[in-house]
Length: 238
Ligand SMILES: [Cu+2]
Image 1 (cartoon, helix red, strand yellow):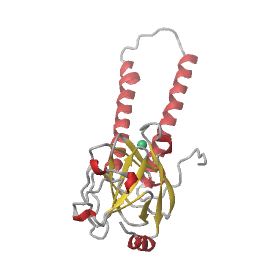
Image 2 (cartoon, protein in one colour; image 1 turned 90 degrees about the horizontal axis):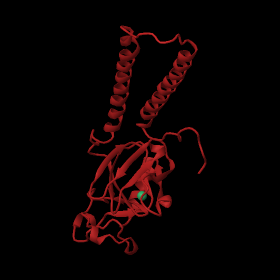
Image 3 (cartoon, helix red, strand yellow; image 1 turned 135 degrees about the horizontal axis):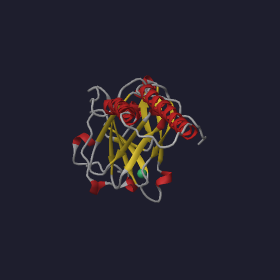
Image 4 (tube, helix red, strand yellow; image 1 turned 30 degrees about the vertical axis):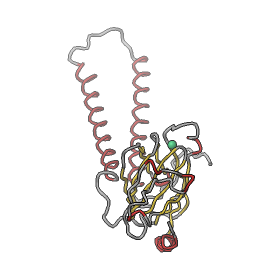
């Protein structure tokens, strides 16, 4: 992978707002850093021996502290809203369903098939070597048409409701180009919804040090134009 000093090109609808927030944070903190250094140097150059602070204390200490507190709360509030919009806002009921499953040391992706419903799973049935890495329960009718792939394929311009699971330890599901990062915890299902906007092939990484093979826990997401995606889905068999 090539090294970039900047962020990878954004390929998701929500990405522009996140990038804007990131740039705003960086600009504000760069300015504060320069200001702090300038004040330090000015303090050294202009020092005039010990002087009682007296009523100046308000101006010198409490006003800046209040201003920084307000600034941090405003930034935190705004980024929290961006973060929550992908998680708690709820996906469109018509959004495309897909499940990402993390395990030491691979990602698997399950699609619900024609019935648009995921079959139930059981940890005891997880057997990647026998073609059932998701642990799909054969007794559940809804799971008969589920299909599992080792690469994620998504449609461009359509909302995706991705559910995230982990089978063993905590993994970090990250697609930098789609501005997605979410921990996957064993025993819990997380939902993230987003809309990929630009077709292409992007990296999926694990961002939690999850064991000796963590470095190779990578996968690929292929974002296809919507019509191509429909053809792809139709061709898939369990
Ligand atoms: Cu991992």
